[in-house]
Image (cartoon, rainbow, N blue to C red; front, side, top):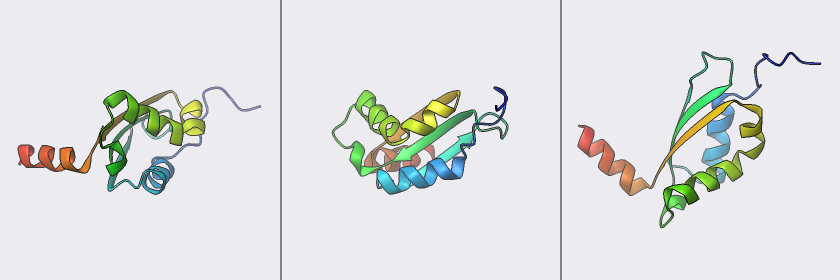
Amino acid sequence: MADAASASGVTAEELKEKLAAQLEAQYVDIEDMSGGCGQAFQAIIVSPQFEKKNMLARHRLVNSVLKSEIAAIHAWTPRCYTPEQWEKMKEEQS
């Protein structure tokens, strides 16, 4: 039996590929916040599927795509933007 402290087996690249494919995401950035053990991830996801959805609905959509992966990790923090919101944010930062 696996040690409870062992890595989740979930990788940032795996999460990124799944989100890009299933949400038609234009931009996905996944950061492993756990120092590489795959237990805590923070994400920026830009998808046209977020149009006309509030933040809760966006998170539910993302969580439904990553249901099995989220069950295997300790912490998941998605930040979800529409393409328009993302472009506006990038303009404000420059």
